[in-house]
Amino acid sequence: MSSDSIYANLTQLGGKTELPASPEAAELEKVPNPQAGTPYCVRFTAPEFTSLCPITGQPDFAHLVIDYVPGDWLVESKSLKLYLGAFRNHGAFHEDCTVSIGKRLVDLLAPQWLRIGGYWYPRGGMPIDVFYQTGEAPKAVWIPDQGVPGYRGRG
Image (cartoon, rainbow, N blue to C red):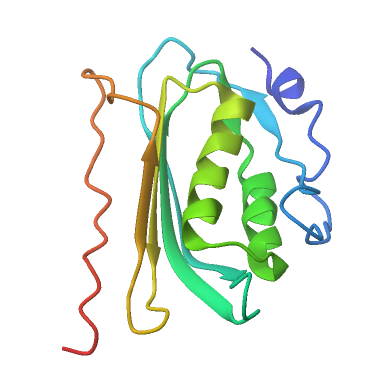
């Protein structure tokens, strides 16, 4: 498969792109997987994810780790970065943000498997960790631990 055909429909890569106004307005893009049929894991880490508390409007911060085993499609990373950045002014609870991101990627990519870990920093003195996955991980694929320790505070 030539690279011209893989990237022909991308609209955001290679140029200046504004941050979308909301996650709903963000355009997630996909490209054909040039290694389709070969099981492997892709990991995206967003250690500075932000959203807003839907009640107070105060910022919330998380370390997100997204792992997926692609099928026929890969997510284009710049579009993913812009999509995640669109949560900066979006009010939603931690659980809704984390699970919504996972479901949107599943709807876009139809991966063999996906999991997302949302490791949220304390709000009101209590950290909240949220995990979503689509089922059992494929046995033939090495999927490492997400490597994010539980919150320990300053100790």
